[in-house]
Length: 262
Image (cartoon, rainbow, N blue to C red; front, top):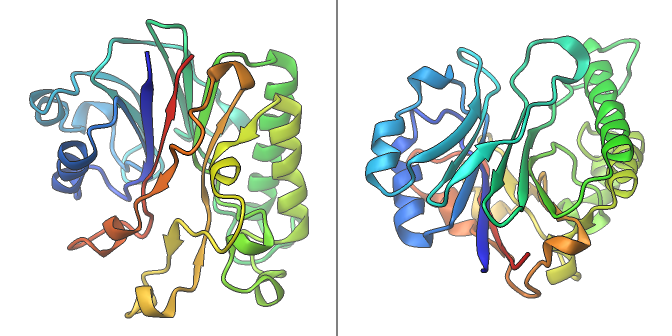
């Protein structure tokens, strides 16, 4: 059975519940993974999503910041949570479908503004989180799994509007790119987005600071969909839903959707 999975940093699920409902109605993914829900789990409008056909949820939450959730119209069970860095931050949740496919939903720390672990504790936290992710992947040897989320790194030159100008900007520094690649390779993941769209500029995030974000088009690909080979990614199925960034009162991220046939 083919399963469609969508990932989206919603930047407050309660503030943008209507946008979530619109996405569910227009795209009808089987599974929607949200990051930066900024809500305790008991405050997420679950009844609203259930009424739209998404009555199954696995989530972790913090009041006012972080937070991840998996909404599904297919039955799922909680597949555990990784509490990297011992901070109590809600940055990972996982769900397993009846066909055995496990979906991991991550929200990697942004890392602040200075790419220096000694001068910037936020960047040190990000690098520690990535190291823990790599170790988790190496130790657990994930199979029949999909990893999605806001990983807060644009790894390739064509994943940013200007490779040269962003080399020293957090999210595209060589040390972050190297760390993210270690996460990917140690876990045996394939970047399915770039497998489907290998060439050309590709973004999923555009800053709120740009009033004319679409024409300026100074984006970054911070959001990712990875999979193990046995998840059987459906070639050519990936879409970055850029138009969603232009909806009224949007998130600064666009959703990404892809299909799998495990």
